[in-house]
Image 1 (cartoon, rainbow over the protein chains, first blue to last red):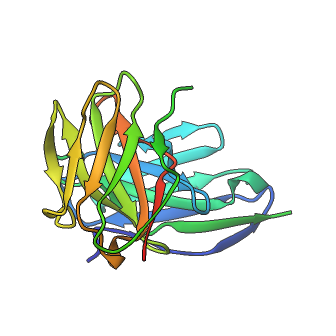
Image 2 (image 1 turned 90 degrees about the vertical axis):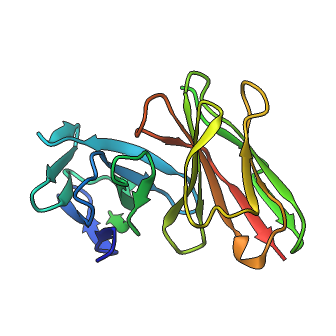
Length: 110
Length: 112
């Protein structure tokens, strides 16, 4: 099983749509979870940390299910500027080494 | 908003040459990292650095690689004898606390 697994997409959605991305991770000892976004040939940018209770930041909602080792990201009211690759990121065991998924590509069209 | 900066943005070198990639982390951050991303592949951890020593390194980070924080601001990655397969984007990251890491814009290394 891959350390962090994501559907590569692409997800092609119209502006205003709601889209959800899922991610699974293999190491039950992982304690920190993040979503990063990466634009083409740019650096990963921290979108949000993911907490057990779930958290929301504007149009973005992240959920964590530790029992299933599953993380999700929901984007509401998609904007053209949301077009990017969304990276699911997990720390390795109890270290600060981050393990990245391969990313899910989102394309929002007018 | 403070940012991680990296120089150069693009480095072309010949196989077997030494390269030094430079990073200036965010000033009050304590944890420093190097990652790399081969074109079309996922971001991979190389090394973490805290309190002037390596705290974690991956199997990629072999004897050809070294890191240094020569003064209070710079954080460098040295590759002693570059190989073709070292061609990648190298990202520096820093964190104020463990885990929440902020990435620099990267250095594209091309080994010919």
